[in-house]
Image 1 (cartoon, rainbow, N blue to C red):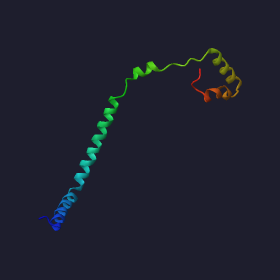
Image 2: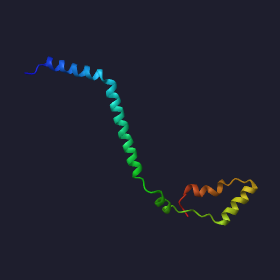
Image 3: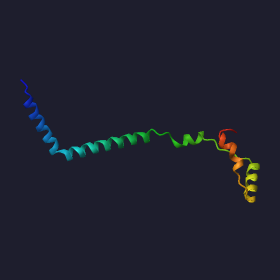
Image 4: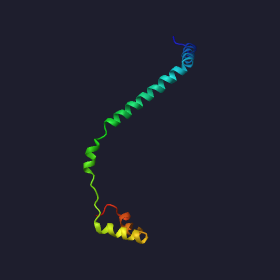
Length: 95
């Protein structure tokens, strides 16, 4: 028959052993978590797509010469060019 006093005695022995080895247990748990995180990070870096394929999808924007000349003229005249960019800020994806 199992008695409550036997269970508490056994539990106290286990707790004393855990308390005695608390530093070792902490180090093992800490190193385990660290190893897990390092393996997760390394697996994420291996899953990254190749950078050269991403460059092909990027479209380069071309600014026409008239706009460049207009901006340079305004810059020479020391005029603020904020008004030219208002529409672009409202809808940056329009062509």
